[in-house]
Image 1 (tube, rainbow, N blue to C red):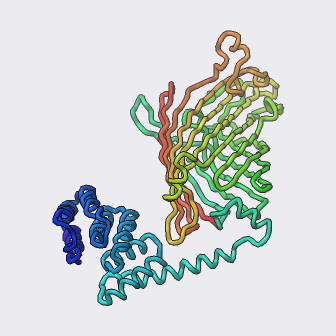
Image 2 (image 1 turned 30 degrees about the vertical axis):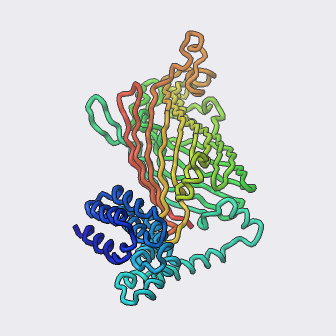
Image 3 (image 1 turned 60 degrees about the vertical axis):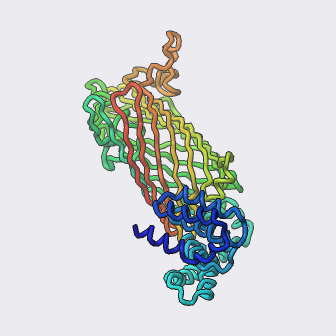
Length: 500
């Protein structure tokens, strides 16, 4: 009710301007006022548009009414446009001037807000509204100017810094460090219950400390330390994961080397099953494997392309021994992200550029168990996850003065899960372990991929914010629908970072 009273009081102030309108135009405006009072903003605006079609100075109030109605409806961008149109027809319309200044102040356009605020006070020295926000506008404009000067001092003066600006033109803080956690739940279909999917200790839940460091235009380093995760249908024996990658950048090209290390703890895992003949998994607390990889990519502000490979060097580790259990890991991937062009310019003008992404990802674990007593007899267990991912993201996290930068997106992931247990010949090529679970013997009989376990379709929604030009926050919600498995997945994610 208060909003309606305020609306009517504003619409009738300056009513003397209506005298030059025709009776029909006056009727449109009066009817529009009634509709706006009822909250029927779109209908009111349509009538104001009819009154404004005359096109001379007498229609200034019609444009003002449209602007104020848009303001009440929360559409500040359109309100600003129509207040300006009102002032084009009547440059001394104080109501439009004071409201326009206030909206520009809210939108962070402090210089323009001050202009209209001061002009309002000159025409109406007794104005009670402008003095409530004009001092703050002066303060924020000064801070904005200082911010611009500080960044101007950081403008590159040599070729190396120019190269860095070309790579990160909108980001004066190229390095970032932070923390992410993803809490996975299994929805057990038989009991219709959500159960927390716990990994092996010490961390139990997938989480990472990360640091993306860019100390110079030509050098970049990425570090991840935490708990790995291959999917809710795989065993819960992953105990830790560390990855460090070093990149040399030549303009937009990137060449890299990486170190990928993982630990597994099989004491509490029911898969693979315990064995008396071979080394019992419960007797081996934690085992580790490290692989070295190559990386190549291309990156600018609108495009990112990366290929990485941490291959398995041997079919199996060749170090048998009493109570010795060893494993290999391998990781391969292709990531491509590019700026959308369809309606891209229109969306970017509104502050919402969008990006498309496509990824192919592969992570595999090979566990080799040796027969007790020091013999060379072995059995092998294989676990693989292959994923095809499509993504769509709106917005870009770039520093904005006194504003929060926001980006949000959606990802669809099709995952293929493979498991092959108790293979008595783990060093043979095409034995159902690796290469999408390919089995040469099965290929002859029409079952070339016998280790295929199930597939999962994962739908992920996420939101990212940049506060105070440095603080990053991330939220994630994901659902995974399994094919033949007896569980589905629910994922809740949270992350925080700091740019420097």
